[in-house]
Image (cartoon, rainbow, N blue to C red; front, side, top):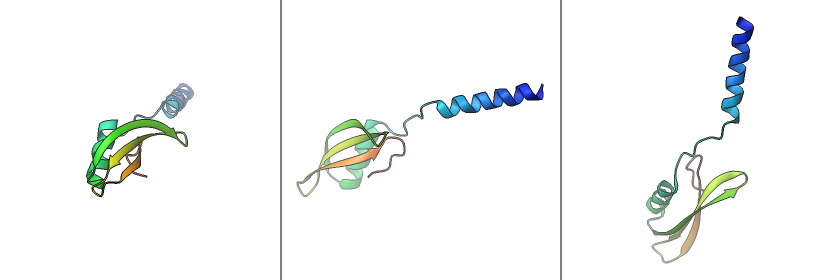
Length: 80
């Protein structure tokens, strides 16, 4: 019986490790984060894949009139 329990635990752990991770933030949250950080106006938000990770490419018009692309990691919410 203990062997079956160990196998069941290992199987559950393997399934959880293989499951795709949920995204920490969505596109609206990424836009809001960039707007707050830059103080600019968000022009567009696109999702992309960078180095095997989902990111949001946020195009923002800064207060100084420059257009910048800000990358936000969808998993962590970290701005790159």
